[in-house]
Image (cartoon, rainbow, N blue to C red):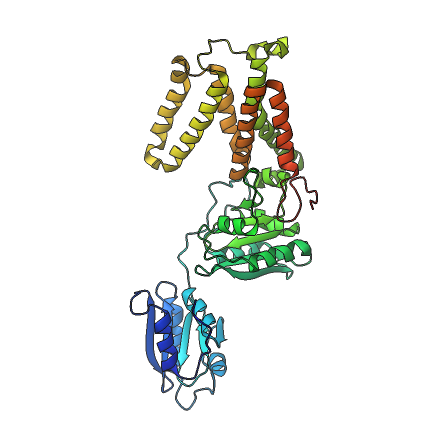
Length: 453
């Protein structure tokens, strides 16, 4: 980290210092361009690929028209009178100069001026705004967040034209210097939560945010490894983020990440999605209730099936048909655990399968994991049916991290039920309830929105 140093009136001294700190000669994309402006030697420093060429050409054309007699007395006057551009700043120390250059801002040094002129005409490589693959909706907007933080703030600002909407930009990471935006409605936000979030982000001491939002989340809140439930809600939809802002929540954006982090959160926030609000009230309530019931079933369906198979006398006559009819070659608990791992294996394989092979490979996997696996005697048809429901039902709620937390709770229930019968099942249920009730989030509240000390 270079020491803080003030910009002097000597352009040669300034360029020599920057060449010492920055690999201008070794790195092809860090460029120094020297030229004459108003009879004085001037030097531009910029990153190739981050500068809008057309904008810089027009700015330079305007500066070349300045004569030696008309040269302003200082950098501030030059920026005000000779640069016909909106985003121009005057910087006095090299720490800020380096931050600007490395983030894509063009910095100009002119002989005789005791300051650097920063011209923010940068542009970042970015993909087009399109609907996210994960957070899809049947109705509503089709835009989604991208990896450029300025685009993401603009998508929310477009939806909320209120002067109370505030977007505070911070910088995290000694090496990466990643931009982090804290977005909130000044008149609706919980000020205590906002102060907590801002203080924690400013106090983060880390070299980089190499995994963007996940790295920031780990720096903000050190989770306990034994409680898998997520502490934050993430969304890739700007309409969802805007709705949360209007509810008084805090939205955190990280540069290079196509999603927003939402605080505070509860279990009900985790399982809701945009479709709940794009339909009439009755339909929205039905979707919420059905999703909540299915989410509960993904946790308890297979453990309850195992519990009743271990205690067939508990099974009512009306549900006698659910009992396993075929011979059980492998204990049910091992069948369920093998299928849990196999389903994750198929999911990981699908992520890495080329698109042109996804259809034939899914057909092969379906045949192997379906009829053939039952006929071979490895699995019973009933076990395959219930595990297929669990695998599909996991996708009814949009939070990927919550899906795995529920999976771990289901595995815990299965193992405890297999080992200790109904006592283990009851103990597992108590552990799940405690995990929810004592899952403290950054706001100091748990998943049930109860304040914890």
